[in-house]
Figure 1 (cartoon, rainbow, N blue to C red):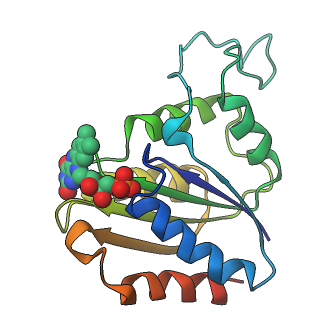
Figure 2: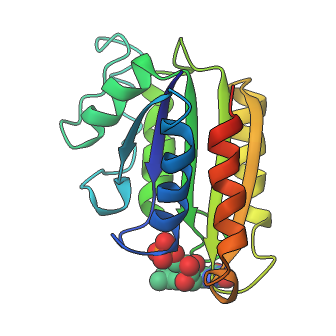
Length: 173
Ligand SMILES: Cc1cc2nc3c(=O)[nH]c(=O)nc-3n(C[C@H](O)[C@H](O)[C@H](O)COP(=O)(O)O)c2cc1C
């Protein structure tokens, strides 16, 4: 399966990146084709609501920034993994811009499955991000929920948490 992982963290070696690394170790041994885009340190602006995409643009966004790479990857992806730290009770602003910019393409045609990885400072801080995941990805895009994984900073030294994500990758169909 073609899997697109979006990393909303600006930190290269943070907890979100470690969760993705564990996933890659499992999923690559299982034959999946995975691309990771670290949107957290890309220049991706918010949606301008100009409606170019729904008029003259025919599904293309007028803004020529690093979102173009995400649009290309979304065309092929069969599964998306939204991976983000929690910033003020939701995914990062960078991830929010990416989600808002999918307005141009609507529901990508091959996308059927989703999962979410969340990293936070404190435990049980996931309500806002899970609300968005459930309503945007599962309800609006009609994707099948394949899994939800969370790690707070105090848990980030526990290898068992990462083992669960590795096993998720290994068993993903
Ligand atoms: C701007 C900012 C806002 C944050 N807001 C929250 C928050 O609301 N709740 C929380 O539990 N942690 C919060 N954190 C902590 C991060 O979610 C946490 O350290 C996480 O593990 C970082 O992930 P990363 O290492 O992948 O970047 C915040 C961190 C930053 C920099």
